[in-house]
Length: 367
Image (cartoon, rainbow, N blue to C red; front, top):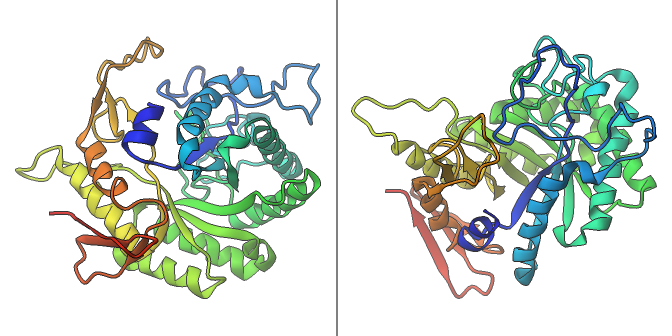
């Protein structure tokens, strides 16, 4: 998998999940999805031998092993960027006492008394990972994922937590302080990773209007592009330029609720994603563009389809099939490379870039 990502697809930006863990006593029982959703946290609150400031990296051995392999493969090019991302605070810091969300998806989940602890958790784990694995080049931390979407509720099948701009500002401020205290000021902060471009614009506008210092502390703006017209993307790009000239990353996307058009074929969703990629680069002006996942149990989401996925046997050796989406991405990433500069084109189905030495111009066309 690491080889497909690094050498075949030529990817250099990776996002690492600082998990919230799962409450072993959650009344909903075994509810987190098995295809990568059950992420361990870095502290076991049941273990009295571990203090509040103690975080154990061995709990997350699998994800760390994958990231180490990725970093080793990318090392010859020297351009890897790793971003830490939190999808939920540790479950015991939440109102729902569940890393999937509160009882109501629209109700804020982080308890006020744990704002400091949450910031310490993210900063401390980041510090330990950076110190232990410098080859990852940990560069950014994003403390929230789709925090205003209303999707995340107790008993759901993946991590998520509602955290609104006023509380986001508190976390960002404490996180800034903890970074300084832990001597990792070079690791930058980002936000707010909302599911739709319009939600991201609303979120960062509220943050800027009410908590300017915390907004100014963001090194870049991040958004997902599950929803948003080209005009919405243009508006967020304009906001970012006019309010601190901040770069934008598109940090998660996929076909989501894609439906088969009349007389169409299922593979067309991959071409819809290709159009979205170009639109995100042209109109959103994203300097980084990320997929949600490399491997999936379906043909639609992952670049690689695990054709033998079995919910009851999740650890069997996977049988993988490269999807059309794999080749759609490869036709961009193998030609528009790290360091190339996107330049204007007059046609909305094209993307053009010039190499750093100005000796090569590349065009990608979705036909």
